[in-house]
Image (cartoon, rainbow, N blue to C red):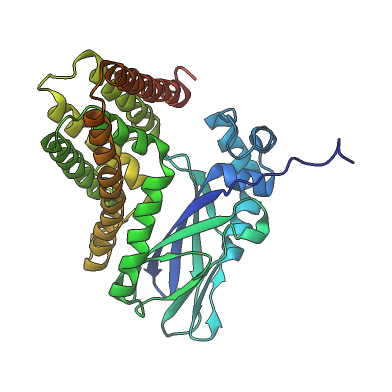
Length: 364
């Protein structure tokens, strides 16, 4: 029994789902983006066994794009049935019925995109309920679903999770949505080890409070710009380009701390890399169509969550670094601190280079 038992996984696996809803005559059109790897495990798509063999945090082999497309073509009916059955719409007390002409494809981002059309025979406010990738499916522990809508003259977005799985269009409160998106932004930064290491590399290279203020401001302004532009769909850069460059930015800043600690190019470099990281942050949000006051508030709230975590890390880490530097008054302590800083910098740079190789489609 021990030999045939599957390995236990204690790690929490989270995923995200994006739903875009639009009025289509008397019905509603829905475009749903879900993560391929999670769907592969759930429905047994090609490549799922290789993914499962590596575990949640393992180095799973990348499933070729051709294999993914072929698998989706072969299982399009199963995919559409699952997504259509878990995304339920209703008007009043009458449920909307998904039609048979669903379209399943692999999006440019690598996500599985399912386009559905719902027939709604009744009138009234539209209620949306999503149970896509619930915990009982056994593939993830937490799912956040971003619902963007343009229905009956109401345009905006809302965030669903395990505690709140449904929303009625037009009945959302802007003030109640702000804390949700602030928390989403905070969780997104905390779950992104690459962004945290980039911030650590910046702090290791800062000598004065002024240095911290300058680089953090440049990074914040840059990633805020591209976050809004990318989330709104005005700028689109494929993930296979953005993610390796984000990893390379970590290694560059870390090595720059060692090789050229007093150069004047730090601010332009940080600003440029901030633009890249903003594109990475935008992966958690997608706004289709024109921006509304609601969606703009959601984007700002998401960015505020990122900034709160960033400021908290700076407020905790930089004073500790200053204390260690000022406490190293003897030659032995100063040398030990220098060796520790070099070691930490090398580790950060090494992690960035490893991620660059893993994420690059030409090197991995």
